[in-house]
Amino acid sequence: MDLFWLEGPSLCAYTDVAEFASPNGKKVATLGYSDCGATTNWQTGINTIDVESGKEFNGPLGLGGKPENLKVVWTADI
Image (cartoon, rainbow, N blue to C red; front, side, top):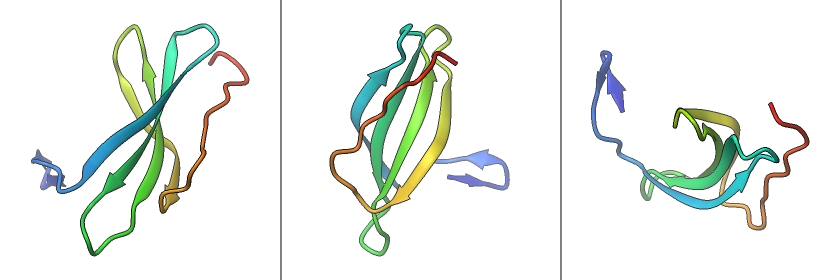
């Protein structure tokens, strides 16, 4: 959690559920759920990771809830 540009511990738990490699293997999309406690709903998200640098890019997709049977299908190497 960021407060006044200071980074602190997150109040949410994040669980990776599945990983999907791009066709050339240079990027990985991770599917996961976050849970911020009893007063909030589950959040589902997909992040991409550059395998070579390890840099993570947060969220081209975010969904409320915890839908089942989601998967990522890469259509191109980008």
